[in-house]
Amino acid sequence: METVRGLINRLRPGLHVRACGRVVTDTTEFMSIGPGDVIRVGGRHFLVHRDAVERGYAYKDNKFWVKKCMELETGEAKLLKLVFLESFHLSYGCVKIRCYRSPQKEARMLDLVRGDTRFMQGRTAPDAAGNPVRIIDIISGKRIDLVTAAIKADHETYFREHFPGILHGFIKACEAIGHLHDQGEQHGDISLDHLMREHGTGALRWIDFDYAYETRANPFALDLFGLGRMLACITGKWVHTLHTLGDFGLDPATARLEAGDFSCVHKNEIMNLRKLFPYVPESLNRVLLHFAESAEIGYDSVAEFVGDMRDAVSPSTSA
Amino acid sequence: MNFKKILLAVDASDNAMRAVEYVGDIAGDCAGFSVELLCIERLPHRDLYPDEEAWKKACEATRTELRKFLNRARDHLVGMGVSLDRLTEQYVTSCASPFDEPGPACSQGTGTAQEILNALDAGGFGTVVVGRRGVSKAEEFLFGSVSNKIIHSVKNSTVWVVA
Image (cartoon, rainbow over all chains, first blue to last red; front, side, top):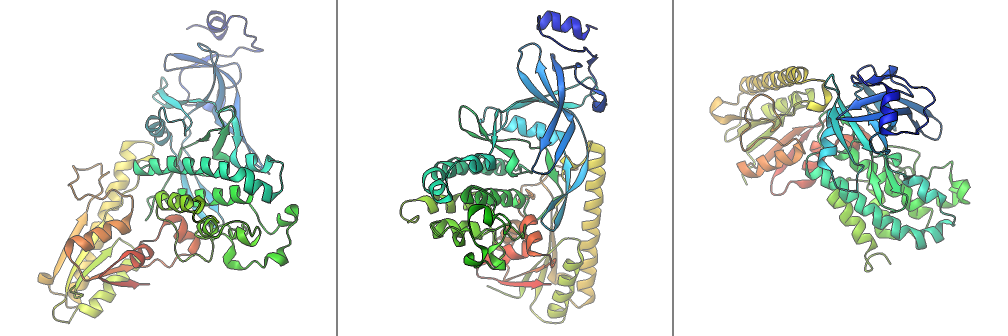
């Protein structure tokens, strides 16, 4: 078998690699695959740079099964997602949901959204042991909540000047999720870090679809909840809690918030944003209140949610 | 609409059995009532299992549990006075079942409540009965709620929610 050095000399001559490792064809033992190794899969060669890292506000998770690579044939950066079967509990407020990481689900989704730029793109190829390795195009961009937070404007200026464009893009992103549901698929992990605004195009694109769940009465309810939380974030320019109000010069006492104004799931997150920002139209606020503790009924489908958002921004109702 | 023509939707849960008991209490000794036991099959999703074998095993276990429950429910209703000629069963298999070729009326698994509503309309039932899990609002929101959806969607029929 050709060595890593041989591959680089043939495919990327001049590329500096600090330490050459081995050529890997069976990725089952993904923990042992590190920088300088080359993964050969799907007739291509991927030089591993490092493990991917997921960063949040107070955490940093190494994703040992996701390798940042260079495709030696093309020089393009790729993410290789290797098979890691795990189940764990996700916390949504006080509710714990059992979640499964499913390579076959993500592989199926990649086929489903091929060519649809509202989603990350990639393909799946089996390694020598039959593991479905997902080869993902890297999206260069910024997560949606960081996009809105970084806009240098007070909230009212943001809301009047920037929000309409952002909402327009968000509605299209929601329609993309509706398209998945129409095909009987769920995204599974709609969170603020999984909707990216791509540098250059400004397009909003969904990433990471490998979460699967136990069967439930409404398999799309969790996705809908994620969309509602995102709407609150882009409307408020941030996810507002009692603790963040001061950062925006808001006084909790003046807002006269009640228990029903908060999210029915994340009890500290404010959904009744009109109490904070009175210029948020009633019609848009009503959409948000579908996700509040005070809601009598939630949305059943993305189509209903999108329909109400569209109504909220139409000239006749948004005044 | 004949409210004495009852559609009793069940899964294999304790609250479904409470609904069965309630219907037995109400309809058992009364003339004119008929009951259809409806079970919408919800099998575990293939994505949760590493291979076909493990998935099939889990599906088999779920199907056996649901069938056993239906038998128990039927025996219970008969024991409470519902005669067999007034008692029918409908088991709607999952379209995603690994076992057999699903029929045209198989369950898509995209919304249990909607499938119950479809059966309600198709069968001309005057009353639909479901159990209620008694979950928190947050759980109801994140998982969906069959009873809530039915309460808000049914027209021209009576809804009994047994909590």
